[in-house]
Length: 306
Length: 254
Image 1 (cartoon, rainbow over the protein chains, first blue to last red):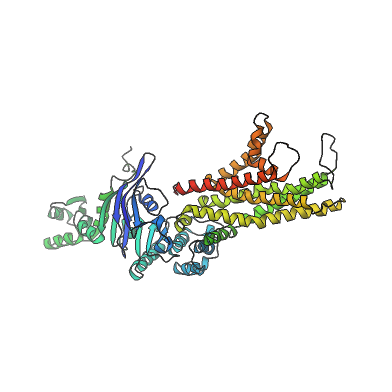
Image 2 (cartoon, rainbow over the protein chains, first blue to last red):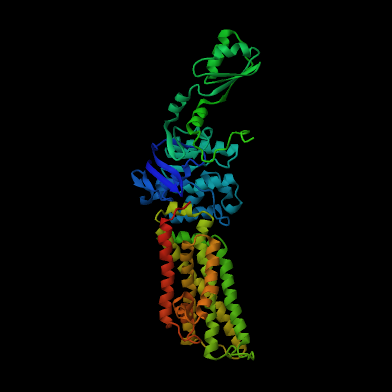
């Protein structure tokens, strides 16, 4: 999948601004950015639902609207809304007919996403997690080689998120499909994705492998240390790119260091530690830095309004 | 296209909207047939009442009342199209079939074909009530050429209004707006146009005028010929579908 120069303006808001990136076949790519960064708009343009002001998006070199058999090439989860009075199975049968697939596919995909028992119930009575699964089942009907998922973890409980992670890994690494999954939380997809495309305010911020991002993020996080000799430890931890804050006589935080480094310093000085923990991963910190200032509706920091 | 039409039938028959609307249409056609038959020949004392059973005017009136049930089929068509937007199934629908014109064409075909048995059911209820009740009052209409033509015309109106409904739904994607707008147009705007002398001449070119031209050739003198009414009504149905298709193909599905 290749996105090139996509641009879309709604009224006076430029939702997507000359955005280009590539999704490598056979990989899981995380499409990340804060709320309002233009992720959904980009995906809807790529899938021919929104008309782009300029730019193109192609699958194997062809725009989505020109694919002869789109359901076999791309499966997309953009929406978790269904006709409330139609059963999950009948919903799937509609799209089996429309795509020229045998109606038995409906039961197969229900089985695949674990909804087999709920297939004859009306979709209006489904929980949010069940809706996500039904949407995923719809995307899988045509057995597509590419899956596009817009915030699939929204509304899932921890168990559901865990299931989703495993399912996406299975689809990509066992079944060899290409997956593009959007999220506003890096942590949600960090363990699943191979590559990331990070956007902010409709523009590309960073594109590359998660390993590269991780390498650049080494030590960018912050570490919490609890020690009876915090005051003696603090100056030892000072250094270029580090920021040490003594919160109270037994507790300090170090920004720009890893737990390994802090542990080694303390050990060398013979300082007793009671706790040593990463408060935020470097990756999360980097993501935050990359996208900060690009949120569309950023709230003022708590307390600043007073 | 076959596959898409089947998909539309699956959508139509996997919810119960059609049952309610079909029952409503049958009740309206049967109810007014009974009312007209009951009142036939009674002189209300002020102006002409409904002619007595057995007269051609009574027979035409009571058999063409089925065409009034077309409002239910219009709503069926509107719901059929607008539910895609209301329940947001337009997204998977247009993902499965990115060429949206094909979706709307399939919907038009699916609803036109489905409307045929619906229309037959409405006509059957209408005719059954008339035959039994007018028969009890002494003179059941014969199924002669004139009466069969009236029934056929009513059936055609029912089918075409279903298609117009799909077209209106594609134009006005908001379900409530489309239904209210269509009802206001048919029941407020057209009667007003028809009642104002200086502009009443255009009434015969409006859908309501076309319906009257098809179903009755008494009463209003300045109506089109029945066959012209048929052509005009079909043109409205196809026109609504074409304009709806052209617009739906370009609009963003948010």
